[in-house]
Length: 322
Image 1 (cartoon, rainbow, N blue to C red):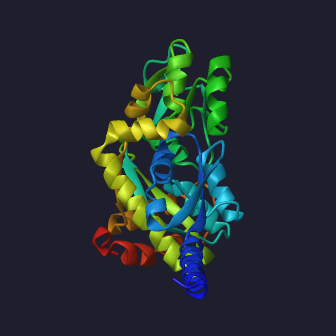
Image 2 (image 1 turned 120 degrees about the horizontal axis):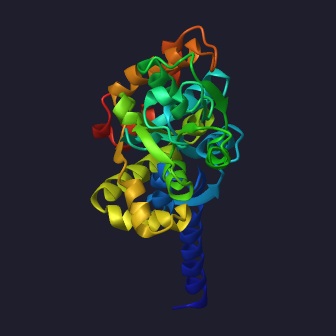
C-alpha cells in the first residue's frame, strides 16, 4: 500500500471515529440516593443509556425535589419524582415536561410514628411532619381526612432528610415520607414503627421522568434515546430484581443488598405513559390548588401541558395510549 493510500485510509478512519464520538451525547442525570431514583441509577450504571449512544453522568443531590430543581436550573437534564413536586414546579413557571412513568407503588411511602402511638386517633394533639408539596404531603392530607383528624394535629413542614432526627429528638411524633427514610427511622429509632402505607389509604404514586421542555424540543433525538434506555432498564429491573438491587446499591448505600432488594421490591417498574396518568394528575392538581401549594386558573390545562407524549411515541409507541 502506497504512503498516500495509507494516509487516506488513516484519515477516513479518524473521521469515522470522530463521528462516532460526536454521537455520544452527554446527558446529566440528577438523582438522590433513594430507592425511588433506582431506575435512573440502574439506567446509567447498568449501561442502558450508553447502549443508546449516550454519555450519561450521574449527579447526586440530597433529595429528589432538589434534583428536580437542578433540572429546572439547567444543572441536570433529566430526573424523576412523584407528581406533586412536578405539578408545582410547572405551575410556578418551570418549563418541564413528563416523558415517562418509571414506576407505580402504594408501598414506597408511609406514616412513621413513635412515642407509643398505636392508632390514628392517638395523633390528636400531636405534631406531624411532611415535606411540603411532596407526594407524602398528599398522603398526609388524605390520611387526616380519612380519620377526621384534619384540625386535630399540628403540621410541621420539614425536608425528608430532616424528619428522621426530628422524630428521634421528640420534636415531632410522626412523619409522612418515603423510602429510605421510612425504613431508616424504624431501624434507628427505638419504638418507631410504620402505622400505615400510602396504598393502605388508597394513595398510589406514579414516579415520572421529567426533562426541560427546551431539551425535548431542541434535541428530540437525545430525549428519545434516553427514554428508550430507561424503558430497557425498567424491563430488566422487573425481571432481575436482585441484580438490580445490587447495582442500584452502589449509589443507594443501603445497609445491605438485602435491604436494597426490599426497597426496590416496593415498586412496579413500568416504563410507559398511559391515559390513567392524566386523570390521576388532574385530581392531584386540584388538591394542590385547594390547599394552596400553588396557584393555577386551570388545573386540567396544567396537567395537559406537563404530560408530553411525543417522546415515548417516537421511542416506543406500544408503551403509550396517549
